Image 1: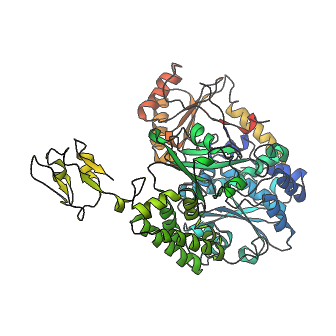
Image 2: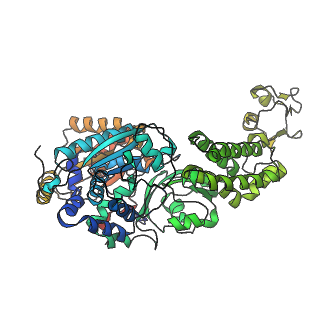
Image 3: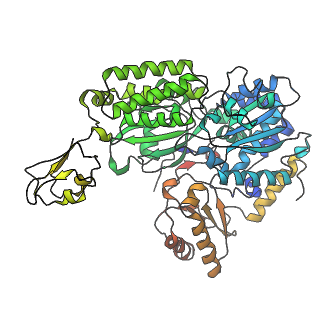
Amino acid sequence: MTVLKKQVRIALRNCGVIDPEQIEDAIACDAYFALGKCLTTYSPDEVISEIKTSGLRGRGGGGFPTGLKWEITKNVESDQKYVVCNADEGDPGAFMDRSILEGDPHSVLEAMAICGYCIGANTGLIYIRAEYPLAIQRLKIAIKQAEEYGLLGDDILGSGFDFKIEMRYGAGAFVCGEETALIHSMEGLRGEPTVKPPFPSVSGYLGKPTNVNNVETFANIPVIINKGAKWFSRIGTEKSKGTKVFALAGKINNVGLIEVPMGTTLREVVYEIGGGIVNGKKFKSVQTGGPSGGCLTKDFLDTPIDYDNLVAAGSMMGSGGMIVMDEDDCMVSIAKFYLEFTLEESCGKCNPCRIGNKRLHEILTKITEGNGTVEDIERLKELSDVIKDTSLCGLGQSSPNPVLSTIANFEDEYMAHVKEGKCPAGQCKSLLRYDIVEDLCTGCTLCFRNCPVGAITGERRLPHFIDQSLCIKCGVCFEKCKFDAITLT
Amino acid sequence: MTKIKSFDELRKIKAKIIKTSGEANSPNSLIKIKVGMATCGIASGAGEIMQVLVEECERQAIDVTIKQTGCLGYCYAEPMVEVQIPGAEPVVFGYVDKNRALEIIGKFILQRKPIEGVIPVSFKTINELN
């Protein structure tokens, strides 16, 4: 069978290839060769210039040019600097970083050492959530083995460069993926963000210049050094180079981890790599960027995926969660789901995020319960704009995105909820109504016997009735009826 | 373990590792079996599959190397087992339960007959790109 190879594995190059607990396996696949090359043949400035030329941008969500970040941190004078790996992966349904750390921890360790060499840091810290026990275990083994081989520690490969890596554990708070909150958490303080500037590259961990990069960003570095910036920059689009790892989830046949060149279209991802929608249902939307992103409609299926196109389409790259939705998903409920997540995860420090998101959630709840008005939709938009403009950190500044993008792309669904009191996808229970069609009901009593709340009445062999004031819309009668006598509207 | 003192030494160690483990496609090397043991694989029962494979190869005295590896990305088809017969392209099997694990050894490895559950590899490696 010929399979079109739409995927290219750069960050995931060794995942599924090597035994992550055997450094020899990794060395056989060129692990630490890029570090060796940097230490023996390149100056820090040359490495930074190579990373800049490659066009690599941060894979954690923001898309900031990696080489530039390194350069800024390098140019700050300090007796002590730090390299931090942000492994606080928190988007619902995302597991890109976990897979890289579990499958190829050495690629990240090597890249951190390269970064340390460039910016002038001798200490690397990996901030990882404690709910990733296997990733933590494999990282610890990898660090130990690299130290035994002298690939981390003092005088690496006889170059005089020292670099050690330590682990820091987070409790799994979404806001700690934001770099200032992450640094505070590592310092033992509350995981709350602070205003930037100062940026961590100037004043970060313990007040020292700190370079924070995401796991996937680091995993790309050794390949750029080994293969060259030109090789890397040939992959991707004009402004987004290389590949992106996505965690493909939701109503899709081939749920899994994929890595595609930037510029691949959503259609290729959903239908060719993802194998299409489960049960042949109709595609409705793709959510990218997690709680900070948005929902894209079928109109965007042929849009090449890169940082800028996704922002222009009202969503964002984010860290790489990609959730596919079909015709049975209610977009108002989806927006509500993400808001619930944000409410849980908001640190509460600034008012717009703490209170604003709460109000957004209340309005969405009102709409899904059938009590919304057209004015509520306007109120949602207005409040969303205020939250975006006035929140302290990225969490609040992006939290209304799922609401705004669903209103922009699925306004008819919001209108059906508030004007007609209907949920087109049939998900909002309060808006459902089950009725028995008298002519079709044979009076078999099956629904009567199965109704959990006794909302159905009627004599044997005579038509039955549903008392709407008692009905909890569980749908049991609808499923049990053998004569299609129950309608759902 | 002695520390590696130079980049040259690292190159030599790599060459030595590849020599001892056998070139991937050399007809003289051992059959290699890999089991996807990331969180996704383990949650789907890869640990048990690994055990079945090890025990069955021991019982039938088949000379193979079996090792764990990370995630290949086909989460929908976990647990995954990759078999590389020397001189041939590696084959990836998905949805591996105990029966299919035994079939992989009994039919695919010993009799070299095709079996069901092959997952087509849908990605290019960095070495396939110029």
